[in-house]
Length: 218
Image (cartoon, rainbow, N blue to C red; front, side, top):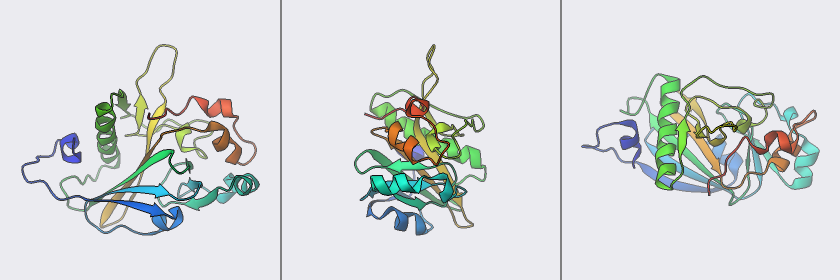
């Protein structure tokens, strides 16, 4: 399913998507502004990297642990908590929509839901049932430091089941300018709560606090 089909946009006159993969330094990937055109960009990190949200301070990270584990700490210009990128253990996708595009929405929440539906459709093709959150942000004691510890509008969750809270499958954030919106999203192929917990500056969560908040995509 294409993004247009996921959004309900007519596909009689599809616009061209620029699809490519960025491989290498994660800091440079986040520092660069995208061109104002439709694009789907996958990023593959060449080193273990913790990516902090735009309002997150470096003091929220235990630098000694990051150094000991060989984890680079970089920032992104979209919101949310930190995400851990270990080579080969995640899928990162940026979607860029220029102003005036039929897929553009001035409604920030509605735009996030569209991105979540694109992911949910892709996961459904893999046989993974998922739900797209349409409610407001649901925080937790660790959501300012750890992206997966909170659940925002448009993010993709496992289906609720008796006795088990939904877990996050896909995290989504965005940055907007006058010319474009950049939606940054990712899923974990392997979730490492012990590493994520260790990287948080004291007082930090335990691995058990974070174990069930994320769902891996097989």
